Image 1 (cartoon, rainbow, N blue to C red):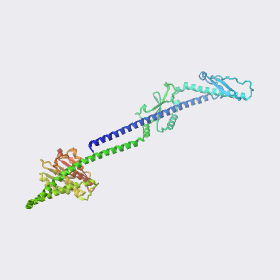
Image 2 (cartoon, rainbow, N blue to C red; image 1 turned 180 degrees about the vertical axis):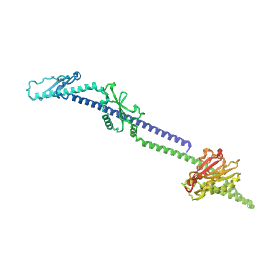
Image 3 (cartoon, rainbow, N blue to C red; image 1 turned 120 degrees about the vertical axis):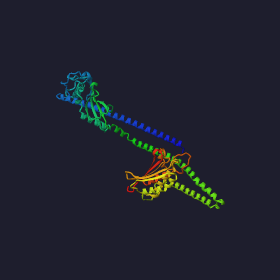
Image 4 (cartoon, rainbow, N blue to C red; image 1 turned 120 degrees about the horizontal axis):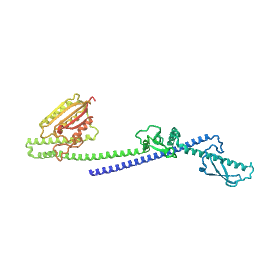
Length: 521
């Protein structure tokens, strides 16, 4: 797959996911706004109903007080103690209709004046010649009595209404409202509307706080509260306000849209899958490129010994060669050396099988790391001195006993020292240093440091990857497949150790530091 195709696919997936995320956020914002508006409407409806309750309670209270003042008045008779107000102008005339026993329909008009007598004026002809104690006369008298009682109750209510209009709003709000009863009304109304959550209410008289049911934080603004007039029919200058604040309103609204949480989880899973897929695609592409480089390097590496062996074989066919034992010995030696070189290259390739398994097969045993470093250094002394270099060791580790596979650990140190020789600077004598020491965490550290060409900062973390080789164009002056350091890291990880690379002083040379657990830990 082309790199441009991968990037195009990535852009499409990013665009699709960004669009999905935008739609989800917009939907959640709209749902939250709608839930908040619904919440406010329910609260306003509840507060309006509570306001009506308060008006009804106040009317009942005035009615009871008026009845108590007029207990001496007989029900059904005119009131002599009512105030001299012209309520008849407000009431007007009342028409009352009834039927006699024989089905005759009669209409009467009732006009009233507070403090006077009720008048009953016939509208249709009423039978006047009935006997004094006849059924018809009794029925007519009963209806007149009901009419007078109706007028009494109506006049009583008119008196209460007049008293409320004149004096109710003049009283302080503390006398008009029982705050505990108001809280009960609010709680009952909220619960009936499905809002069983904590609330705090405040009574405001103009700019003065008359009553507050709880503590409200200072950062709460008036917009966070819902306001309702307690008595809407009071004059504007005498109105009192009820404000309600819900501390857990946001939590309540969020609980109403909690079904969005699974949507976010699925979106997160899609994002993780998308990211992991991209990572795998780029990793596979990178691995493919490194394998192609590996094949090219391997072809270049194998070509030389194969050509040499082929040439030597052709020379052996010459009969003159057999007559010269020295030439024959030289040619057979070349074939032997190139065969060993081929075997070495094949062994390097077979190391790849280690990376296809979870762990290498290790034969662990107790061993002294100081002795191991000293022995490997001794085998490299002649090779280093051949190029005019020096090799020093500094064994400072007091506790150097480890539990390791001798062959693999030997290969690890051998690879590091061999790389130091391979990547030396041609015009500078090689200086190779290996030392051991213990850290404060009870671990053994081994370092291999040289003054070679070094590794650039951008390549330091990549040198431990399979098939990775520092780019040198088409120059193949140093042989290798990019497997040595990857093998080193894997073996050390199987030993529960680590390795890291650092630049030398002045960006010259490289320093590899190995960390291994001691046998006691």
